[in-house]
Image (tube, rainbow, N blue to C red; front, side, top):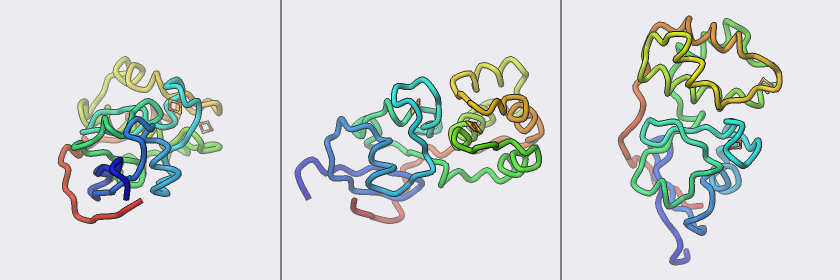
Amino acid sequence: MSNKAMKININGQSFTVDADPNMPLLWALRDMLQLTGTKYGCGAGLCGACTIHVDGEPARACLTSLKQVADKAVTTIEGLEFEQLKQAWAQHNVPQCGFCQAGQLMSAAALLAKHPKPADAQIDEAMSGNICRCGTYTRIKSAIKATTGGYQASHSAAASMEVEA
Ligand code: FES
Ligand code: FES
């Protein structure tokens, strides 16, 4: 382990990542930790495919460095515990090719954590940064509206397991 190794908390687990602290979190998620549910789309903060939560707030993993998430709680699609939203997604047949969907779900969950019953304008604003080349926007909005419960976003850096990468 080099002196660059740092600990990051993802989905309630503490991972030790041996990498440049300036490296985008997305690279670590996908290439070092095999958390490949978070997708690489544009790499420039423009598409939303890489959306995760950092202390409950939506963030773009391609623009978030490892050092920015030290001592913070990161949640990825693998750790998203919001069954009602996932069921609504399935019931409304939202995914088409699926590539953007992890990011869409993470943005929707963050919205519902703040606004359990969001107005159309709030949905439009919260989801505006998530691009879908398959045009599933209408279904996404229907699924969000069909979700009647809020979401408790993770803000705690509970370290239940140590994993080195
Ligand atoms: S890959 Fe991060 S916003 Fe597109
Ligand atoms: S479902 Fe294909 S890009 Fe959104």
